[in-house]
Every structure is written in structure tokens, then in C-alpha cells.
Image (cartoon, each protein chain N blue to C red):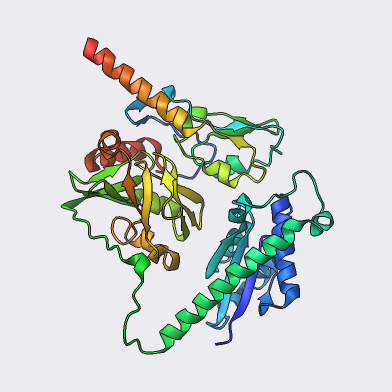
Length: 311
Length: 107
């Protein structure tokens, strides 16, 4: 298959990292390693129609350099859904970015440009392989479903019923399981699996407020999380949001299906849209600080009635 | 009632972990060495925490800030917002809770 790539960098000049990201994208184009079709964000605004008429072999990548996510927003303005989002701020843990006011020409000489270019090149290369495989899998008749060890955990919660609240056109649901389901004040739920393990996700209220979720990035398996620290970060067409953990503990599984289909969180927030599994440090004590389904439902109902809905 | 009016300051009535929101020290502080008063956070925060006063950013409604939310920090182009450490604030909330419990027990 002949993949073509449309890479949309943010072209940000606000921060050094924005300039460096743009330089890395241009340097990647110069290397001719990938078949780039477009590399200019303004084209999305001028000729948006072109983007919807690309062949299925065209891979649209949004390259964000910081959490302002200009690139995602530019594409979103024209309802263009990228296949893949890259945020190079994740590489910054190990790279020193120059501080202070530097022009794009001065930064060109900085070693961080070549390092970021390499990281970017590797990430795009990896995704192109995935993208190609996906297309090939779709084009042949599958004999056996490939097994994926990462997604071996299957979440089958038991909810006795759903509480439902309607306010104007806004409707939100909260499932009930008196012994297993807990909620925090930041719209995350935790479902107790037994043996100190919980599944974590976000509530129907939060997914509706976020609107279409475009990407869900987890902390890695094995990461230790404090209570109310982020287990994952989500980008939606409207905003960025962290999933704040109701419990402290270690991440032992992540829902890798969300990498391909983050919309599962919107479609089914309490089942298939689960986000991570946590091995709790202190389940008994921390669960006593959280809300039950009814408490969360009443809390949200009162909040919405008093404050309205943010849109 | 759909709250899309940015000028309307939402009234935050709720409690957090059983503690009155007013007693919890969670809100952003502006680092004026970095802030360029672009006003992105004023537009971004749906809870009316920020405002502009004579072209300068201010934290107008600190107690409207959602406890442990740092979304504005994520989107600030200049990384100019500072929050307290979460564990310190959590310790504060737990301390208030235990004081409340004690005063109920004493009563």
C-alpha cells in the first residue's frame, strides 16, 4: 500500500518548543524519509474540502508542540479528524530546551532539533506500520482474530440499574452497584474488582461535557499514582482533561482499545470506555472518602441545577 | 439553562470530600514573570476563575476553581500558572474533616 502523509505542525512561535517542533517537521520533510503531501496548517483553512477528498491511504497527523494543541484545534475548526495525534512535549523529560527568547534561526543550530526530529521520525514510522497493517487487515478476510496480550483484561461490570437526570437538553446517567462503585469529585468512577484492584473511568457527565474525545493517553503500566493524581490525559475537540484517580496505587492494565477508538469513552463510559486498572495501596481507607452512586448523582444534580451546564 | 455566557460568574455551592469549598486552598497563582496577559485562560476556564483588569490578568474567583483541576496550567502558552502541591491540599482537607468529626463527637 502506498501511504501518503499529511503532517500538520502547529507552526507555533509562542514558545521555543513550538519553533523547535516546526523545525523538526521541516527537517523531516527535507530528509524525504516520508512521503509528505502537505505540511502547512493554513491549507486546512483555505482548502478544507481537499482534506475530506483524500484517499483512504492518506494518513493525517496533527503535530502539537505543547498543550495549547494549536494543530488539533486548527483541524477541528474544519471538522477534519486526524488519524493520529503527536504531542512532542512528552519527549521533553530527557531533552533540554533552551530557555529565553530565541529566534527560529538561532534555534536551528540547537541540538534539541535533531533529537526531536529523530523521536518524531521514529513515532511516525511506527504509526505508518500500524496504519498499513490496519488497512491490510481490513482488506483481507480474517481467518483468526489476532490475540493481543495487552488487552487480555475484559471488564464485565454488574450494574443493577441506571439513575438518570435530565436538565434542559442535557441528560446524564449514573449506574448503581452499592458495594463496588465509587466516585470522586472530579467525575471519575472506580469499580472494585476484588483483591484491592479497581477499574477506573470517567462519568457520563464528564464525557458529555468534553464532547468528542480524540485521544486518550495513559500513564504507563507500572506507574505509581497518588490519590487525585492523573492516570490518563484526554484531548477532546473542546479541551484537555486529566482523569484524576479516586485511589492511590499502581497501574496494572490500560484499555489499549482506546488508542484506536477513544470514542468508546463517549459511547460507553461505564463499560467499554474503562481507562485503567489500578492495584490500590489503601482501598479501605480511601474508599471511605469517596461517594456512592446515589451520593454522586445527587451531588451532580444539585450542582447542575445551581450552576447550569458549561458549554 | 445552558451556561455559555462568559461574563456570568457561576456560583460554586458544592463541597469537596465533605469539606466546604471555601476552606480549601486550591486555586492558581499567576507567575507575572512569565504571564503575557494573553487572556487565553479567561476564555478557557468555564468556572470564571480568571478575569482581565485593565489589561492585566487577575484571579478573580479563586474558590470557583475545581479542586485538583489543573487544565488551565496545561493550556497556558507561557506556563505562567502555579498550583499548590496536591498532597498538601489533600492533607489540609483531611485535617479539616477530622476536626469536623471531633467537634461532632465532642458535641
